[in-house]
Image (cartoon, rainbow, N blue to C red; front, side):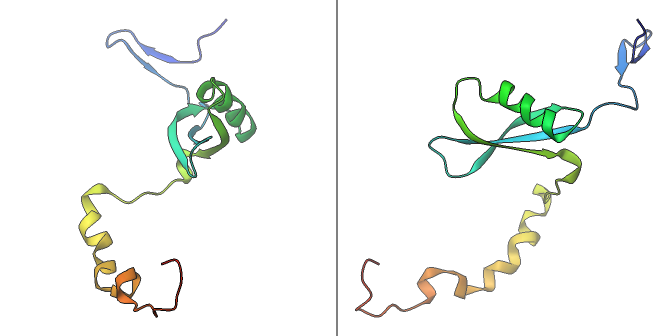
Length: 110
């Protein structure tokens, strides 16, 4: 059997081969939750196998009702360093706040 990794014995490092499986990010929606929460990552050859492995790995106690798996390369996120300039444009849009609107007295349940 051949080794599928490149080993550098001098440094003790193991380098994965170029044909490594893609990385998937796993999101699970709990029975009591309304949204999916990131629970971890895994490597799999395709989406179907990633979903199957995510179910086995992250929902062992039947706590999930829905699982999402997304290739990590398809996720784009804002940088924490840019949070102030990135979210600053919404500060001057006061119409997005509920206190901007005046409600008539005859509107029930508010």
